[in-house]
Length: 97
Image 1 (cartoon, helix red, strand yellow):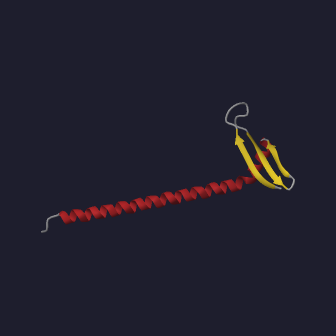
Image 2 (tube, one colour):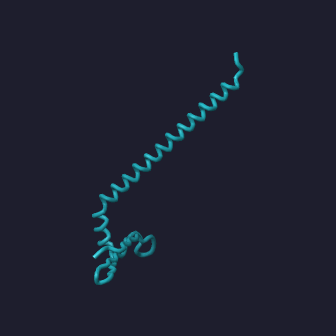
Image 3 (tube, helix red, strand yellow):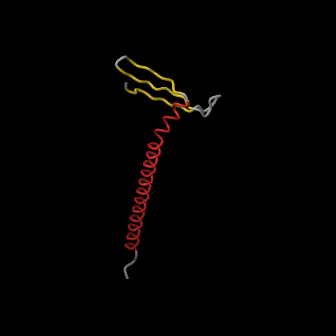
């Protein structure tokens, strides 16, 4: 059997607020079967996946910081280039001694 679809949802209101529920749909030679996942099932899945989730979050944060730093460096270079052009233009407008 192959996992076809996994859906996990945290309830945001009502008597189930803050809890998880979900469904897992599997397909195989004999057809499809869908299982309702309760809070315990989902907790076990999240425990198994926790390390991967943490590593993915760290990698995303590193990429975000690298992009932000690259953007900051590019902005600095543009500002430096702009300042240099303005300085040269100002010198060209100065009267010759």
